[in-house]
Image (cartoon, rainbow, N blue to C red):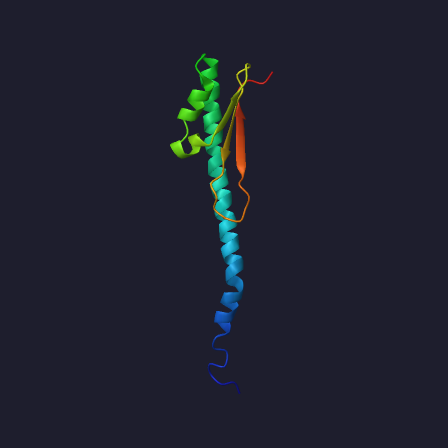
Length: 111
């Protein structure tokens, strides 16, 4: 017959063993959400730049003005003569040991 409480502490040991994996999964999911949001901002800025280029306004200025100031500082905006606008943004770091990542989106007429 087992004594009551013979397994005391086993749950804690199992939790401590699985906790790093849970934290890592949480960080990866959070990083994916941040990267998706950054890509959405890049796509919106590329669309704004493309629309501006269609009416003859400066595409770069329109793309940068549609971004939040923190993202606009590190944005790389490329516009071509045919009206295509490409916006590249740095993904904010969520996991400090990962290399910096960038996302890019393009909008406009295709030849």
